[in-house]
Length: 62
Image (cartoon, rainbow, N blue to C red; front, side, top):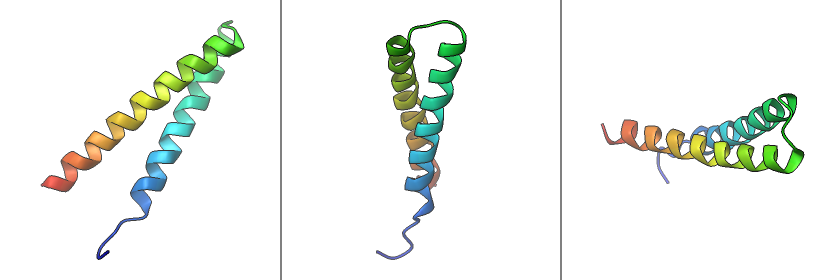
């Protein structure tokens, strides 16, 4: 377990949760229902986590 970076997983979780809350709140402000806004926030959370994870993996290979 040499040179394990604890910041990366925590940053991944933080980005995913912040993206979900931001998208959900923006959708609620624009008049969408709570269930629809929550679903869109979840989709955005998954997309942000996948994008961030692929960027981490790409930088680690170099």
